Amino acid sequence: MPYPRPSLSELRAQAAADITAGLPTADGLLRFSNLKIIGTAVAGMAHLNYGYLDWIAKQACPYTATGEFLRAWAALKKVYPKQATAGHGQVTFLGAVPGTLIDAGTEIVRGDAVAYTVDETATVASDGSAALSVTAVNPGDAGNTPAGTQMTLGSAINGVPSTGAVTVTITGGADQESDESLFARMLEAYQKPPNGGSRDDYVAWALAIPGVTRAWCNPVGFGAGTVVVYVMFDEANADYAGFPQGRDGISASDNRVTVGSVAAGDQLTVADSIFAVQPVTAMVYVCSPIPRPIDFVISGLGSASIATRTAIAALIREAFIEYGSPLNDGSIVPLSAIESAISAISGTVGFVIETPAGNIANTLGYLPVLGDITYS
Image (cartoon, one colour):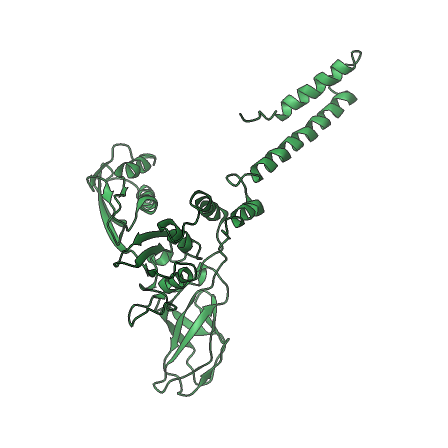
């Protein structure tokens, strides 16, 4: 049973009682007694020692460890914090003078001052276009940028217009993993040890990649010898509702790759990482789930405020993140979970979810997401 840690007041009372018992002619409880002051100081030191021992006990167990001790326990299972990564993509400048050189390391700046550098020296093509592969200067998901975003040269180059645009979405940037995420992966590693390429292994390999927040495995998804891994980038690709940006396929390192089947973008990053650890016989396809919007009709809240409606939408999205899956394994998004979450919001008494009428079954290849909400 757990040890009952005494409170500071209990320790002070115990010290005063010990002083009084040890010196029958002295009163250790007098307000300005030197003995009482000494007893209070001793009790305070004992309280700090109890606190330190309590902290040591927590760090001595993987389930309660924090900070560097959490990382140490995770490392015993070869689970390491995912470091921040920089986004990669392509920026194109049109109307430049053919033959003009753009050196590697040239700075390109987004409208909000986020900076990128050119990966390799490029020459302006005969049609006046310069397609430049770029990498964000600072790692993190802030560097991810959708196609069409305007970009500007950091310093002028003769023969090259100052303004260009993103032509291949800049993706792959991810912030450093939080302790909460590391803790969840560590527990998975302790509870589900590696098993030579089992379903859980593929999920763990995918989740170890920076930016990946959710993953699912569908064995034999595209026929015998294949494994399909679905992934989501909920934080790094928040502008795209968390869906990977790229092309489904297999690793470019797989010598069985055929024209059109190699992955690209986020999917290629995951496929290449998994290829290094997967069983040699498996052909692993990394895919993005297809969004499946689910519309809601909620009665009884026709006069709900914008703040209330925003809170309802956020909670429904959280339920989809927690229970949604692109597998047809019998899993569902329980309507009761959505109802209980909405009922906890102030001012929603009396609501009824008319549509959908029941639990939302997960479908292979599709991931349920929030569609439109109609209030009446």
